Image (cartoon, rainbow, N blue to C red; front, side, top):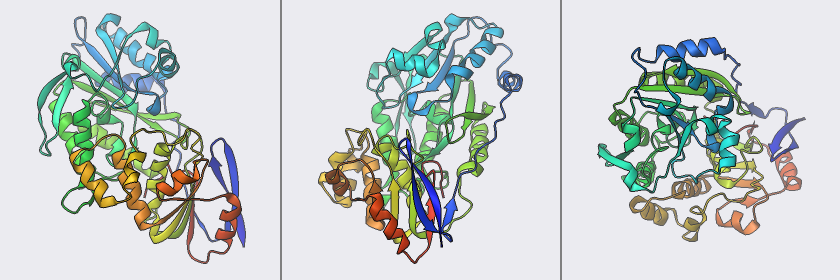
Amino acid sequence: MFKNAEFKYGKDIITIEVPDKADSLRIREPDFHIIRENFADDFSLCLTKNLSAGKAVSIVVADKTRLCDYKTYLPWVLDILLQKGIQTRQIQIFIAYGTHAGQSDKECLNAYGDSYQKYKFIHHDCNDKSLFTYLGKTDCGTMVHVRKDILESDLIITFGALSHHYFAGYGGGRKLLFPGLGYKTDIYKNHALFLDKDIKKLNPGCRPGNFENNLLAEDLKQIDDMIEIQRVSIHGILDSKGQVCQFIVGNTYNDFLRACKHLDPFYKANTKKQYDLVIASCGGFPKDINFIQVHKAINNAAMFVKDKGSLIVLAECRDGIGSDTFMEYFKYQDFNLVFDILKTDYKGNGGTALSMMAKTGRINIFLKTTLDDKICHKIGVTKIDIDIIQPLIKGFKKEIACIENASLLIR
């Protein structure tokens, strides 16, 4: 017997018949619990009593790829600061681009609303070394350069969405300061910890929702500790549609860990089981807008697939690959060779390319997509259409699972 399963594909829905016994692996949507008065109380408790005229306040926000409904909630933060005696001219707001491209004024207005016109916004440039001061080196050898203007702040407020990150464990939180406001060379040095040079494989501890034996996350913690300025962190918990449902506010690293622990039950699967076949959607547009975004879903879904098993992913990729530093590594068609290149010269989406090679070496990946057939072949996946997917599933006799939002669900 079969049942209908719906999968988002771009802005469309694709219905596929799957066996009744196929498992459905789903996220658990967070409930909405935001009351302005409660938020104001939590935020105010984290502020020092001597916050007043003369104090420089820096707010760090994410770019358009990691929004936290800044149009609605950034004014709440700014209003509280003004009520505490801070003047508009004392506040500067940094956009934590990391290595991402900068945004236009139109994009910023769309992301941050009227605040973008009322306050001083600083567009971070990871390439301009003159902006930075050297603070030291981590145990893993990452040189740490921090923006001079950030170090001149009396208070730093990081404000962004918390999420699971495919190699740093968690995104948001401390990542707004670094790599968000980091120097490009330092960022790539940190990201290169994704590569375990001793075993010549991707570091097994560098995975979503994990801190244990995660050298990259430990490195981020050391970098965070070097910035010894009063801090308030606002962590947004989002639902699958990107709506902010809850805030966790604190001023210590333990508050960040508390927020991570709060996030997990919504997006961590309640099973460690692996399957012979997994059918997954990224969650539709914009989660499948390009392959770099799609890789997050492939990374998550692949963890539920047995060795030599198969993964079918529905991913439109209307904007193509989405990176200038991804495809170049596939000309080598050799994991070990690419590993050797990246361990000495890590850059861009090289780690994503290596991660993809590791997966296609372990499992069979099929992609329902608009990507060109030649591109699919080059990155090691088989392009497949719905008229082939359906009979393949109907003839499959082993264990199957369906994931409707693989960009968010982790194992």
